[in-house]
Length: 275
Image (cartoon, rainbow, N blue to C red):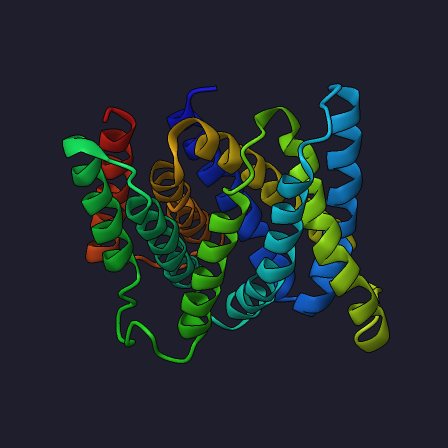
């Protein structure tokens, strides 16, 4: 699959998944949501890998996946908490901005190149996320969930970098399964011993799960085909979709500058795909 298309599909699936996760987190405990969504993702990924006949990747790829899953769990919990206390659009954009910076910096340090159009696209995406994060009447990193969103975004950035170290495309579903298996082994017993596993709105919690799994899958396809910088920047567009869903469904309002941010981010993505 085209790496730019994979990156955009990752943004779409992440965006929808985050919106549903945000709705669920306003009704339930973040720890419980993760405990109920990560284990089923393991089963789905394993069954899909087996049915497609994917060979097991090298042990190193599985270890990278497990390391990503374990370290990324903290970012997931922070993100759910941020979505539960802050405006969904602003929180998602704050997380997206930081999640883009980390893999891009790592990719460029490793010698990846974006090209002229790529740099213009990158500037558009980053400028767009900055404009989107400016909530009218609030400071960009005020309480209200945005600061937690920034911290979660940094954690997601490192998660993407670790996940991107797995290079065997033929067995990428197994690598993703390793990531979710590791996070499940941590969060499931922790939730069972503290907050319990009885969800307040189980259908909504389960509906939020596919977005994360598919987002990871498309992200890895993009990394393996186009590198960390391209995949990280395109995937970071997911807050634009989450914000638009919040505007349409929850009636959250965007200022003129935030709408300009949406336009800049989408234009930047278009330029990046033509680099």
